[in-house]
Length: 414
Ligand SMILES: Cc1ncc(COP(=O)(O)O)c(C=O)c1O
Image (tube, rainbow, N blue to C red; front, side):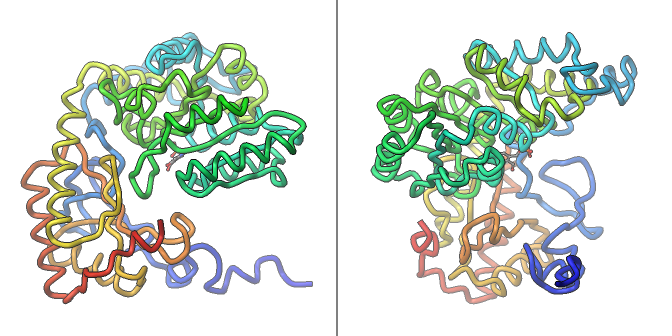
């Protein structure tokens, strides 16, 4: 027998090297100021490319005013308790009505965190007799949800965005399973920035009698002419049985929402353990999210602006020879040569210390082993000058570090 705490004084576990060193530079850095393109890091002004504030609305007066009004009217605690007991309110119901309309679905349910929304939704629906066929690059929340749903043995990861492999798993699942099949994918893949092949996935799910859950955390408010997400972008929102978005990214708040058929949403409401056994989203956030939704609906120019910043940044990086893979969204991954951790840390430090450009490095377990990337997020709040200064910084860093950009690491980890 050993002491269960023994591992805690080693450099094992996730990001073990950084934890063991008490790091606050590469992991857990402290950024000061309102979330946006200009913040302070270790007392210095930096241009920040690491926050999912896609539409640049974090810190908008409308959000602050909505939060302040709710705070003075209801206080910070209300409502108290689970939605099923004492935590329900007219405001929650109204927010769900608005999100159902926004997502073009009959009903919706709001959760306290996106993570808890995915966990609750999937685990409320999937039981021991059911199978989950899931894109292998899906976010941890979907993997954890599947495990929580006791579907471990019927967990079928298909090769990332590979429709032949998806069909192969659907065929096998249909043959083997006693219950139903849930297909799970992200809409916009949060690390690579590419899009799920949703029209094909919708078609295949239907052909095999499966239901489709799309976690569109990075497409919600971002993709499609009206920001309704990746389903709107492809014109296949109807084929998505359960559409999920988080409020922690484009909506610059906290919480998440699942939208779908009324009877299914009500089942989730009464069976999602993360709804039944957790306190309701505080009214301060219900009202903040509502204000964010109004901005998302009424200011399409924010999305145009975001795309123009994204295009400028992505073109500039590609011109310099950096590998940004096959992104199809604002998410701009810069793959680091041969997944080399030392090089990645030196590049991050160079950009921060010499040029005041703040990027975050992402490693396993957030991305597969061997991959290291800087996940850059252009937003509507960045200026052309921010982009140009950043491109100059990457050029100077490339030259001073004599980086060999001839290999394309993204191709090795497709
Ligand atoms: C694809 C995806 N799903 C779910 C989540 C969890 O969302 P939240 O931060 O709102 O808990 C995230 C957050 O990173 C995500 O990227």
